[in-house]
Image (cartoon, one colour):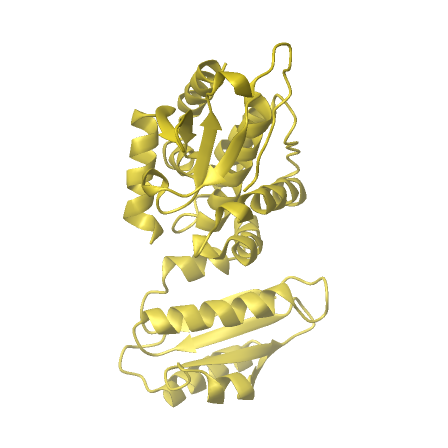
Length: 306
């Protein structure tokens, strides 16, 4: 059964808003049950309450909010809903979420908790990527593995890190599946893990020692350093040798920097190296849909690392 939409007026008290939501749901035969523990213990409990919908259909949660969405309220609601959505009752079911709000619901909540397939993908990616918060170089290989699983389970796109056509499949996933979904806001977590996957694909392709690293050019997230030292590639050896070791405007800057200098030559600890920012390139691919642009950068990096 479809869940009814409920209009909450600015200035409504939380009690009045709840009564309006309850009447609307009762009119279509649905009963709301309050999450008492959540509604009395959270920092936003004076302006925002959670309700479970008693139904034989898919498990559903209604969030009632009567104030403008502060950062604290958004973060609290996001964490509560992530936990509920990832551990639904009954197990294996997909939780539906509806917002009854006096003010516009932030895009990040609409994206994560909408009904589209991309919302479920972004929820699962968020549990891994954490919106890129405190993303360390040592996390990137794990994030890449998560991206391969998410692409397969949600869109049926198989991407192997050692597949020479892996970058084409990644482009397909972004341009043919993520972009057409046109969600509110950007699926940042999905793009971060796919950026890590792009980096791992490159590491497998270049045939040189590489590592994820942090430096000022890569802010706000790690990027790749590719060694250009001649002694790093023995004659006749083609397989790669690997040594492992907010967003918003900074992501724009990183993407612009990567477009201008897709393989900047620099020095790391005295040795010549190429730098590459795969996360920025995936974000740019999502924004522009420029498949050939990423292919061109990919070819240039491969050529310059020979």
